[in-house]
Image: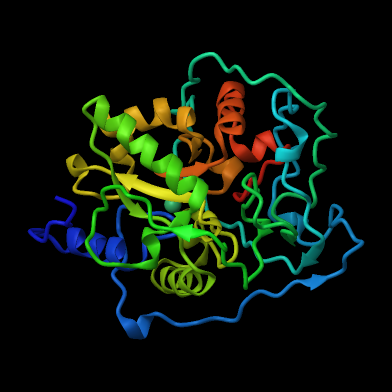
Length: 341
Ligand SMILES: [Zn+2]
C-alpha cells in the first residue's frame, strides 16, 4: 500500500512517476512532468553570494525593469507571533538571478484555498520586532539567508539558502509514501517530521489517506532538477514551477509534497479539488503547516498554485499566517512578483 503502483498506462503518468521517484520538482509538477535521463541531469554552477556581513541588502536598482514597480502587497504583521519566529534577514547580496519574463497565464482566482482554522489562541508573548524590511526590490537581487536552520526560515526566489546548508536533524517520518525506495526525499527535519506524522494520523482519523511524495532535497539535487526543467521548458516557464538551487523550500527539510491515490499520487492542481486536498488545506495549520503556494498568488510567491506543497512553520506561526489570510511572503512583508506587469 505504500508502494507506488506501477500500472500506469500513459507516458504522462510514467513521466510523473519518474519525477516522483527521482526528483520531484521545485516542488512541482506542471501538467507536463519531465522525465529525466541521467545525461539530462547536468550540474550548473552554484550561485555564489559575496558576503558582506554588515551589509543588510538594501533595495537595489539593478534589474528593476524586470519587476513591476508596484509596491509589494504588504500586510502589516500583526501581533500574535513572537518576534523570535521571524527569520533573520540575510547578510549578503548576490547578483540578480531571476529572469521574471514569464507571461502570466495562471488565471488569478479570488481566494487562497487555505481556510482559517479554529480560534487562534496564540497570545503575543513578546512585542514583535519591527517588520523585516524588504531586502531588495522584488525580483532584483538574491539574499543569502544567514540562519537557514530557523524553523521560520523565509525562502523564496530572492532569499536563498547557502549552497552547503544541510539540515542537521533530518529523519524519516513514519508516514505513507507514494514510493518504496529509500531516498533522501523521504526525509524532513525532526520537528517537521513529527508534525507530519500527526497530520497524517489526523487525516486518517477523518478517513483521509495522504501520501508523502517528496520532502528534503539537497542543493545539488535541486540544481540538477532545475537545469533539466530549463532545458525542457525554458527558463521563464521552469521558474514558475521549479526553484533554482538554494531557493527551494525542500532544501530546508521543512517542506513535503503530499498527494493521494485519487489523483494517482500526482502533484497536480487536481489534488486541490480532491477530498484529500481539501482536508489538507483546511487542517494543515492545526499541525503547524501551511499551503505555501495558494491559488491565485503566483504574482506574490512566484510559483504556480501548488495545493500539494506544505511547509512546516510551527503551529503558532502557521495559524497566524492562515488567520491573516496571506502568503508567507506577504506575512514577512515582501511580495515577489516575477511576472511583468
Ligand atoms: Zn514542494
